Image (cartoon, rainbow, N blue to C red; front, side):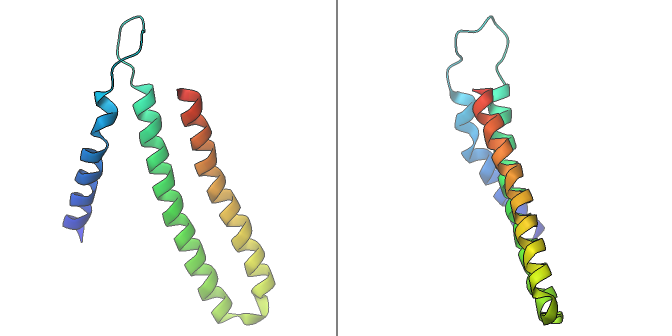
Length: 100
C-alpha cells in the first residue's frame, strides 16, 4: 500500500510539473513561486477535504446504524460538518485566485 501511495505521489508531482514550465511575467527579478504554491495548496486542501468528507460520511452512517433514534441530530451534525469542510476548499480556491 505504501509503495502504491509513493507511486501516486510521484505521478502527481510529474503531472504538476508544467506549472513550473510557464514563462515568468514581467517582474522585478527573483522567482515567482507564490502561484505554484497556491496551486499545490489548492490540490492539498481539496484532497484532504475529500478524505475528511468520506470519514465524516462513514462515521455518520455508522452512528445512525447504531442509534436510529438519533438520526435527526446525526444528520444535522453531518450537514454542518460537511459545510465546514467544504468551506476550507472554497477559501483555498479564493486564495488561489487572489494569488494570480
